[in-house]
Amino acid sequence: MPRLFTGLEIPSDLAAELALMRGGLTGARWIDVADYHLTLRFIGDIDPETADAVDEVMAGIRRKAFTVTLEGLGCFGGDKPRAIVAKAQPSPALVELQAEQERLLRRVGIPPETRRFVPHVTLGRLRNASQTAVAHYLGTRGFLTRRFEAANFLLYSSRDSVGGGPYVVEAEYPLA
Image (cartoon, rainbow, N blue to C red; front, top):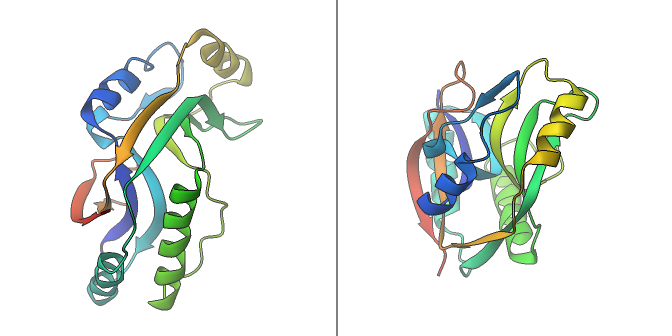
């Protein structure tokens, strides 16, 4: 069964810049630069027939290209930090693309996403990192606003046991 998700690819020049944020935090497992992406919708483990249905409905999406703005670093997990991320502005175009995918995936039998959509690029996963260490890391990293053009979105597959890649592009869908 493939484990699928949709996302936006991070351009290589921006990915190289994000890679400079790696290091200096005990307990971090940094994501490979080639695997940076902005997840739109995690789909999960599905059978091949459902994967074909997912591909078909994603191919039917007709939206315009748009600009994505990354606006700083943050962490997920609150009292128990679990990820370092580059935060993305939830622009109307980005949120509407994600919401359309959610609606279409429900139509082909994918259960609804239970988590609120918070656009981001995961830079590292944390294990046993203290709040203090994470706060220090975030406070010492300068990250200015960066933008990129989302001219397409992708259907990715991943392996269940790996977490954080490697990811394989299964399909590409243009944004006009």
